[in-house]
Length: 312
Image (cartoon, rainbow, N blue to C red; front, top):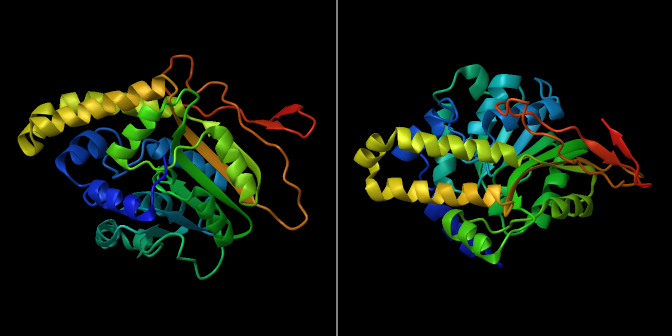
Protein backbone atom coordinates (compact mmCIF):
# COMPACT_ATOMS: atom_id res chain seq x y z
CA UNK A 1 0.00 0.00 0.00
CA UNK A 2 1.29 3.45 -0.93
CA UNK A 3 -0.16 6.84 -0.07
CA UNK A 4 0.38 10.37 -1.30
CA UNK A 5 1.38 13.21 1.01
CA UNK A 6 -2.07 14.73 0.46
CA UNK A 7 -3.82 11.53 1.57
CA UNK A 8 -1.67 11.33 4.69
CA UNK A 9 -2.32 14.98 5.56
CA UNK A 10 -6.09 14.59 5.20
CA UNK A 11 -6.07 11.44 7.33
CA UNK A 12 -3.95 13.17 9.97
CA UNK A 13 -6.38 16.05 10.25
CA UNK A 14 -9.35 13.72 10.37
CA UNK A 15 -7.92 11.68 13.25
CA UNK A 16 -5.62 13.98 15.20
CA UNK A 17 -7.13 17.47 15.02
CA UNK A 18 -8.75 16.82 18.41
CA UNK A 19 -7.10 14.58 20.97
CA UNK A 20 -8.66 16.21 24.02
CA UNK A 21 -12.09 14.55 24.00
CA UNK A 22 -13.68 12.66 26.92
CA UNK A 23 -12.39 9.21 25.89
CA UNK A 24 -8.81 10.50 25.68
CA UNK A 25 -9.16 12.18 29.07
CA UNK A 26 -10.86 9.33 30.92
CA UNK A 27 -9.38 6.18 29.39
CA UNK A 28 -5.97 7.27 28.11
CA UNK A 29 -4.47 10.28 29.86
CA UNK A 30 -5.96 9.79 33.31
CA UNK A 31 -6.11 6.02 33.59
CA UNK A 32 -2.98 4.97 31.68
CA UNK A 33 -0.56 7.91 31.71
CA UNK A 34 -1.19 9.38 35.17
CA UNK A 35 -2.63 12.58 33.73
CA UNK A 36 0.11 13.16 31.17
CA UNK A 37 -1.32 13.73 27.72
CA UNK A 38 0.72 11.09 25.91
CA UNK A 39 -0.94 9.80 22.75
CA UNK A 40 1.65 7.03 22.44
CA UNK A 41 1.65 3.46 23.71
CA UNK A 42 5.07 3.63 25.33
CA UNK A 43 4.32 6.38 27.83
CA UNK A 44 6.78 7.23 30.57
CA UNK A 45 8.42 3.81 30.48
CA UNK A 46 9.60 4.20 26.89
CA UNK A 47 10.51 7.86 27.36
CA UNK A 48 12.56 7.13 30.47
CA UNK A 49 14.53 4.57 28.46
CA UNK A 50 15.21 7.11 25.72
CA UNK A 51 16.31 9.72 28.27
CA UNK A 52 18.71 7.21 29.83
CA UNK A 53 20.18 6.04 26.50
CA UNK A 54 20.55 9.64 25.31
CA UNK A 55 22.00 10.79 28.65
CA UNK A 56 19.69 13.79 28.60
CA UNK A 57 20.60 16.63 30.96
CA UNK A 58 20.62 20.43 31.09
CA UNK A 59 23.46 20.60 28.55
CA UNK A 60 21.65 18.62 25.86
CA UNK A 61 19.53 19.98 23.01
CA UNK A 62 16.88 17.94 21.24
CA UNK A 63 14.21 17.95 18.55
CA UNK A 64 11.02 15.92 18.53
CA UNK A 65 9.44 15.45 15.13
CA UNK A 66 5.64 15.09 14.95
CA UNK A 67 5.40 16.44 18.49
CA UNK A 68 1.62 16.76 18.66
CA UNK A 69 0.63 18.90 21.64
CA UNK A 70 4.14 18.72 23.07
CA UNK A 71 3.57 16.29 25.95
CA UNK A 72 6.81 14.41 25.24
CA UNK A 73 8.77 17.65 24.96
CA UNK A 74 7.41 18.88 28.28
CA UNK A 75 8.21 15.54 29.93
CA UNK A 76 11.85 15.62 28.82
CA UNK A 77 12.31 19.28 29.73
CA UNK A 78 10.70 18.84 33.14
CA UNK A 79 12.45 15.61 34.03
CA UNK A 80 15.93 16.16 32.59
CA UNK A 81 16.23 19.89 31.90
CA UNK A 82 17.16 19.59 28.24
CA UNK A 83 16.16 22.23 25.70
CA UNK A 84 13.83 20.74 23.12
CA UNK A 85 11.92 21.90 20.06
CA UNK A 86 8.77 20.07 19.02
CA UNK A 87 7.99 20.17 15.29
CA UNK A 88 4.32 19.55 14.45
CA UNK A 89 2.67 19.95 11.03
CA UNK A 90 -0.92 19.75 12.33
CA UNK A 91 -1.74 23.40 13.03
CA UNK A 92 -4.39 22.66 15.67
CA UNK A 93 -2.06 20.36 17.57
CA UNK A 94 0.77 22.91 17.48
CA UNK A 95 -1.53 25.73 18.61
CA UNK A 96 -2.81 23.62 21.48
CA UNK A 97 0.76 22.71 22.45
CA UNK A 98 1.76 26.37 22.66
CA UNK A 99 -1.29 27.15 24.78
CA UNK A 100 -0.39 24.37 27.20
CA UNK A 101 3.15 25.72 27.52
CA UNK A 102 1.73 29.00 28.78
CA UNK A 103 0.32 27.11 31.78
CA UNK A 104 3.59 25.35 32.59
CA UNK A 105 6.10 26.54 35.22
CA UNK A 106 8.59 28.96 33.72
CA UNK A 107 11.64 26.67 34.14
CA UNK A 108 9.87 24.12 31.90
CA UNK A 109 8.21 26.52 29.47
CA UNK A 110 11.44 28.34 28.69
CA UNK A 111 13.12 25.08 27.66
CA UNK A 112 10.40 24.00 25.20
CA UNK A 113 9.48 25.46 21.83
CA UNK A 114 6.66 24.22 19.59
CA UNK A 115 6.81 25.08 15.89
CA UNK A 116 4.14 24.44 13.25
CA UNK A 117 6.07 23.06 10.28
CA UNK A 118 6.61 20.06 8.05
CA UNK A 119 9.41 18.06 9.67
CA UNK A 120 11.08 17.69 6.25
CA UNK A 121 11.12 21.44 5.68
CA UNK A 122 12.32 22.63 9.09
CA UNK A 123 15.83 22.66 10.54
CA UNK A 124 17.15 23.83 13.91
CA UNK A 125 19.37 26.93 13.99
CA UNK A 126 22.25 24.75 15.19
CA UNK A 127 22.78 20.97 15.17
CA UNK A 128 21.27 19.20 18.17
CA UNK A 129 22.35 16.28 20.33
CA UNK A 130 19.21 14.15 20.00
CA UNK A 131 16.30 13.74 17.59
CA UNK A 132 13.25 11.84 18.86
CA UNK A 133 10.15 10.42 17.19
CA UNK A 134 7.52 8.75 19.36
CA UNK A 135 4.66 6.82 17.73
CA UNK A 136 4.76 8.95 14.62
CA UNK A 137 7.13 7.35 12.10
CA UNK A 138 4.40 4.89 11.07
CA UNK A 139 2.23 7.90 10.11
CA UNK A 140 4.77 9.32 7.65
CA UNK A 141 4.81 8.27 3.98
CA UNK A 142 8.54 8.87 3.34
CA UNK A 143 10.48 7.26 6.19
CA UNK A 144 13.85 7.13 4.35
CA UNK A 145 13.70 10.88 3.62
CA UNK A 146 12.70 11.63 7.21
CA UNK A 147 15.62 9.61 8.60
CA UNK A 148 18.10 11.39 6.31
CA UNK A 149 16.65 14.72 7.44
CA UNK A 150 16.97 13.66 11.09
CA UNK A 151 20.65 12.92 10.48
CA UNK A 152 21.07 16.39 8.99
CA UNK A 153 19.72 17.98 12.18
CA UNK A 154 22.22 16.19 14.42
CA UNK A 155 25.67 17.25 15.50
CA UNK A 156 28.52 14.84 14.85
CA UNK A 157 27.92 11.66 16.88
CA UNK A 158 24.41 12.81 17.81
CA UNK A 159 21.68 10.19 18.22
CA UNK A 160 18.22 9.47 16.85
CA UNK A 161 15.61 7.53 18.83
CA UNK A 162 12.43 6.20 17.26
CA UNK A 163 9.55 4.47 19.01
CA UNK A 164 7.02 3.22 16.49
CA UNK A 165 4.45 0.61 15.64
CA UNK A 166 5.88 -1.60 12.93
CA UNK A 167 5.23 -4.77 10.99
CA UNK A 168 5.40 -8.07 12.82
CA UNK A 169 6.47 -11.33 11.25
CA UNK A 170 2.91 -12.36 10.34
CA UNK A 171 1.43 -9.05 9.21
CA UNK A 172 -1.37 -9.33 6.63
CA UNK A 173 -2.59 -6.90 4.00
CA UNK A 174 -5.86 -6.74 5.93
CA UNK A 175 -4.10 -5.50 9.07
CA UNK A 176 -2.12 -2.97 7.06
CA UNK A 177 -5.37 -1.61 5.59
CA UNK A 178 -7.03 -1.54 9.02
CA UNK A 179 -4.13 0.42 10.56
CA UNK A 180 -4.31 2.94 7.70
CA UNK A 181 -8.07 3.41 7.82
CA UNK A 182 -8.30 3.71 11.61
CA UNK A 183 -5.12 5.59 12.51
CA UNK A 184 -3.48 6.71 9.28
CA UNK A 185 -0.51 4.35 9.52
CA UNK A 186 1.11 4.71 6.11
CA UNK A 187 4.49 3.05 6.85
CA UNK A 188 4.60 -0.20 8.79
CA UNK A 189 8.21 -1.38 8.56
CA UNK A 190 9.73 -4.42 10.24
CA UNK A 191 12.62 -4.53 12.68
CA UNK A 192 14.94 -5.64 9.88
CA UNK A 193 13.65 -2.83 7.66
CA UNK A 194 14.55 -0.21 10.28
CA UNK A 195 18.09 -1.53 10.67
CA UNK A 196 18.58 -1.17 6.91
CA UNK A 197 16.82 2.20 6.76
CA UNK A 198 19.01 3.63 9.53
CA UNK A 199 22.17 2.33 7.86
CA UNK A 200 21.11 3.76 4.50
CA UNK A 201 20.43 7.13 6.13
CA UNK A 202 24.00 7.27 7.46
CA UNK A 203 23.58 6.10 11.05
CA UNK A 204 26.16 3.78 12.54
CA UNK A 205 25.48 0.87 14.90
CA UNK A 206 21.70 0.90 14.35
CA UNK A 207 19.81 -0.90 17.08
CA UNK A 208 16.17 -2.00 16.96
CA UNK A 209 14.67 -3.50 20.10
CA UNK A 210 11.31 -5.24 20.11
CA UNK A 211 9.22 -3.82 22.97
CA UNK A 212 5.89 -5.29 21.88
CA UNK A 213 5.09 -6.52 25.42
CA UNK A 214 4.87 -2.86 26.43
CA UNK A 215 2.29 -2.21 23.70
CA UNK A 216 0.30 -5.25 24.85
CA UNK A 217 0.48 -4.11 28.46
CA UNK A 218 -0.71 -0.59 27.58
CA UNK A 219 -3.47 -1.91 25.30
CA UNK A 220 -4.77 -4.08 28.12
CA UNK A 221 -4.74 -1.10 30.49
CA UNK A 222 -6.69 0.97 27.96
CA UNK A 223 -9.31 -1.77 27.55
CA UNK A 224 -9.75 -2.02 31.33
CA UNK A 225 -10.00 1.78 31.63
CA UNK A 226 -12.63 1.96 28.89
CA UNK A 227 -14.86 -0.48 30.77
CA UNK A 228 -14.19 1.19 34.11
CA UNK A 229 -15.27 4.57 32.72
CA UNK A 230 -18.01 3.24 30.44
CA UNK A 231 -20.81 5.25 32.06
CA UNK A 232 -18.92 8.54 31.81
CA UNK A 233 -17.80 7.87 28.23
CA UNK A 234 -21.32 6.95 27.11
CA UNK A 235 -22.75 10.03 28.80
CA UNK A 236 -20.23 12.40 27.20
CA UNK A 237 -19.51 10.74 23.84
CA UNK A 238 -22.26 8.18 23.31
CA UNK A 239 -22.57 4.38 23.19
CA UNK A 240 -21.32 4.19 19.61
CA UNK A 241 -18.07 5.96 20.51
CA UNK A 242 -17.53 3.63 23.46
CA UNK A 243 -18.10 0.51 21.37
CA UNK A 244 -15.87 1.85 18.61
CA UNK A 245 -12.95 2.39 20.96
CA UNK A 246 -13.39 -1.06 22.52
CA UNK A 247 -13.59 -2.84 19.16
CA UNK A 248 -10.61 -1.02 17.66
CA UNK A 249 -8.55 -1.59 20.80
CA UNK A 250 -9.37 -5.29 20.78
CA UNK A 251 -8.26 -5.61 17.18
CA UNK A 252 -4.94 -3.87 17.82
CA UNK A 253 -4.34 -6.00 20.90
CA UNK A 254 -5.00 -9.17 18.92
CA UNK A 255 -2.64 -8.00 16.16
CA UNK A 256 0.18 -7.41 18.68
CA UNK A 257 -0.41 -10.80 20.28
CA UNK A 258 -0.41 -12.58 16.90
CA UNK A 259 2.79 -10.75 15.90
CA UNK A 260 1.07 -9.02 13.00
CA UNK A 261 2.16 -5.75 14.59
CA UNK A 262 5.30 -5.03 16.59
CA UNK A 263 6.30 -2.16 18.85
CA UNK A 264 9.87 -1.08 18.19
CA UNK A 265 12.53 1.13 19.76
CA UNK A 266 15.10 2.03 17.11
CA UNK A 267 18.22 4.13 17.51
CA UNK A 268 21.37 5.11 15.69
CA UNK A 269 24.29 7.49 15.97
CA UNK A 270 25.25 9.99 13.29
CA UNK A 271 28.15 8.51 11.44
CA UNK A 272 31.39 10.38 11.88
CA UNK A 273 33.85 10.74 9.05
CA UNK A 274 35.83 7.62 8.11
CA UNK A 275 33.81 5.38 10.42
CA UNK A 276 32.56 2.15 8.85
CA UNK A 277 29.07 0.97 9.72
CA UNK A 278 29.04 -2.47 11.34
CA UNK A 279 26.23 -4.98 11.44
CA UNK A 280 24.55 -4.40 14.81
CA UNK A 281 21.26 -5.67 16.11
CA UNK A 282 19.31 -6.00 19.32
CA UNK A 283 17.53 -9.20 20.25
CA UNK A 284 14.88 -9.28 22.99
CA UNK A 285 15.57 -11.64 25.87
CA UNK A 286 12.71 -10.88 28.26
CA UNK A 287 10.44 -7.90 28.63
CA UNK A 288 8.94 -8.64 32.02
CA UNK A 289 10.22 -9.60 35.43
CA UNK A 290 9.44 -13.08 36.72
CA UNK A 291 6.08 -11.96 38.05
CA UNK A 292 5.23 -10.57 34.62
CA UNK A 293 4.17 -7.22 36.03
CA UNK A 294 7.02 -4.78 35.47
CA UNK A 295 8.38 -3.84 32.07
CA UNK A 296 12.10 -4.31 31.63
CA UNK A 297 14.25 -3.69 28.60
CA UNK A 298 16.18 -6.52 26.99
CA UNK A 299 19.86 -7.26 27.00
CA UNK A 300 21.41 -5.95 23.80
CA UNK A 301 23.40 -8.20 21.51
CA UNK A 302 25.92 -6.52 19.24
CA UNK A 303 26.82 -8.64 16.24
CA UNK A 304 30.29 -8.08 14.88
CA UNK A 305 31.11 -8.57 11.23
CA UNK A 306 32.24 -12.12 12.06
CA UNK A 307 28.83 -12.93 13.49
CA UNK A 308 30.03 -13.24 17.10
CA UNK A 309 27.69 -11.83 19.71
CA UNK A 310 28.78 -9.59 22.56
CA UNK A 311 26.45 -8.78 25.44
CA UNK A 312 26.48 -5.14 26.49
